[in-house]
Image (tube, rainbow, N blue to C red; front, top):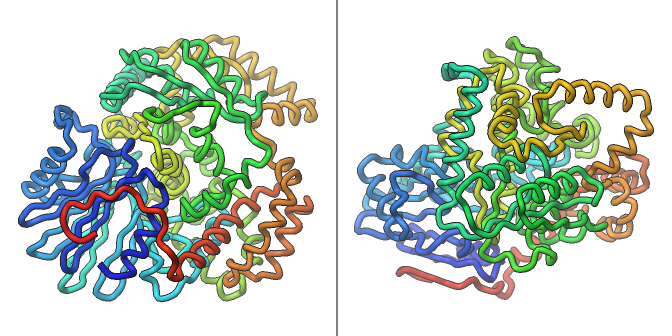
Length: 617
């Protein structure tokens, strides 16, 4: 192994409990790093003709009897030998599998449908580098250079579109990835074998009640697959549809182990109030974790480094660190049961109803879809405003590439109903790069499971009739009919339960009328119901933000430093509102600062526990 490979491993290995397995032979090196609570050893298997490594967990019914990781590795390799790469596609689980053909000198990499375990690629003449973190690829770059399109994407959307990463030439691999690399001719092929085919297969037949029952059965089986061997559950619960569904399914299952539920946010927020009510209804112990005043800045340096500046700083505390809060006690041995991805799988994600309001139900021109995607997915200021912060040449490159990425995604989908086209695009961009950070952050030190990404659940969901899918109609029907305990708890802004009663609609109508008439009351309700008050936090933490301002130097070029500093000051002073974009500037800057410090030869970081099956360490 060369010094660049070793340096990359040292950049990657930042958790003292992570296990590292390695194998090395001429022309091929592989390392598998994982937390022992997330994956069980061993993860690398060698035979005369092949080397196989895999990360993640499988939930295939045909392999349920396999309890030994070594036997599963052998089963995966036998499947590959018998059926080729196709035999490792569409498996039930979240996984990445690499097979090295030692004789033909061909590398195969197959990932699960959803790509929630992100991996990155760097192609150099005569070499292919793959990694689960961009930082470990940095030693193989000729120079560290910011990709202006990636930075523009983060400052606009709060995540990276497509295959963008902060480091130019490092690409994020797609979901359902299939890589084939032939070493001798230096030939790389990269494809995606599955792309959320909503709107393509024939819809299911049956009444809404019948389909709701079928959905419930699929979710029950999906949960049962993932609960085998689980004795302790950590249940993040907000009162939204996804987490209440997880709570309801768990309560109605035959699970008899420990459950620790928790919610985070200010005490008056809906997440805490509804989450506590659901937990009490089901008899689960519940802990409310208050949002700290410095929740954006408290872990900002660590989060920027750990997660390669892949997410903005307002996400640092809740998804990443709340499950380790001291008030929860020792959560080692707990498995996190997460509702991540549920909304989008079963109807609508972050933009409930917006796609239909903007585009209707008939196919639309590509430009109309493009504008709808940008309008809905944009997290911060308009792209035109952020564009002015870039140096001119970088601005042209960045925004042309962002438009092209979205156009390329939407172009083959424009003949579909806009809801299907835009929802699929949200899957391929926002959910894969933004929502998937929930799994990434939890599985840094705790195993996470979600029935919503079960293969059979998603296959069923892609065929839900349009009128039952949009607005999460069938999803809510399933909760009302089959999870009545959690349906009885207030939901959403109305504070009314999920029930069929006509009085619910009448109360909701009157509440909307009252809030429209008294905007001051509406504002107060919004403040009390929010998890945190972002503008107040910015004001309260202004000193910390100003102390970190020097890191912005790392972003020039491609940014115009004079304009960025003025923009940053305007956000802190309240001239620019909302000021939440400030949380997107610092992670890239702090990550690059840390990378610059570490990319030079330095003493080795604390090593993980090493398990090296043969080969060189």
